[in-house]
Image 1 (cartoon, rainbow, N blue to C red):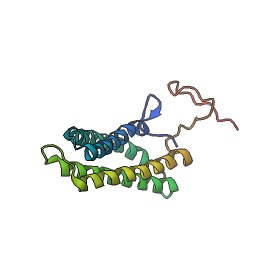
Image 2 (cartoon, rainbow, N blue to C red; image 1 turned 135 degrees about the vertical axis):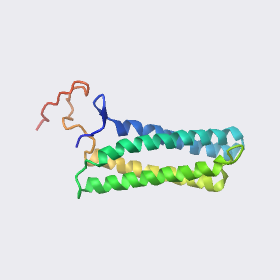
Image 3 (cartoon, one colour; image 1 turned 180 degrees about the vertical axis):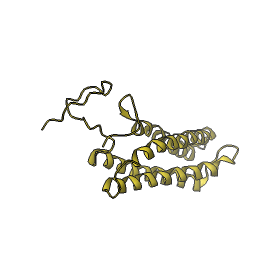
Image 4 (tube, rainbow, N blue to C red; image 1 turned 90 degrees about the vertical axis):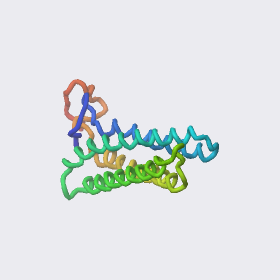
Length: 164
C-alpha cells in the first residue's frame, strides 16, 4: 500500500522519523554523560536536543497520521498502525515531561524523574520503531506498488509490472 504523503517519490514519514529518534536518543546520552561527569553543559545539551527531537516528532507524526488514515479499517495493519502511533505519542509525552522537569532549573539539571522519563521514552521508541518496521516490511504499508528488484528510479514515476 503506497504512502499518501510523498516527496520526490518517497514516503515522507520514514524520512522524517530519523531526526526525532536520533535527537531524543542523543538527549538520553547527554543525560548519562551529565550523570557521570556532572558537567552542566551536558544537561543543557540534553534539554536543547530534546526540544528539537520533540518538535521533529510532532512533524513526523503529522505525516504518519496522513498515511494511517488511508489504511483500510478492520485490518491488522490498521491495528498495528494505531499501536505505533499511540505508542509514539506516549514517547513524546514522556519526553515533554522530562523536558518540563528540567526547564525550570538554571542549569537544566534533569533530576532522576526526568532521566527516568527519557530512558523510558527511548525504550518505548524502540518498541514503536519495531511496530513501524512491521508495518513497512511485513505488511507493505508505505511501499510503492511498483516495487521490485528492477524498479526504475522513484523520480521517473513509471511502474512496470511486478515479476511473477
